[in-house]
Length: 85
Image (cartoon, rainbow, N blue to C red; front, side, top):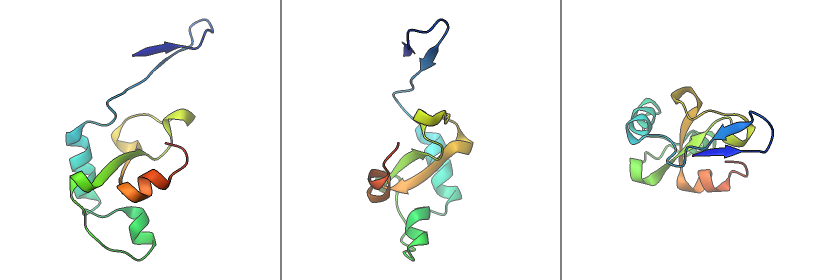
């Protein structure tokens, strides 16, 4: 979906589907099924894919791209606590 801001040539593309499931699975495995923010809190719980959500490390609103190097998997609680998705 393309969104035009009104400026000449200023079109941004919005990926409504977010990160593909296969990319999310690969990242979660790379993170050894942990939420990095839980680890920082001393909680080493492991999670399944359904318990996690994809997160842009650099938010989309700040120019972060929907690509593997900008993906982290967070538990639902931590992802929802973030103020800028």
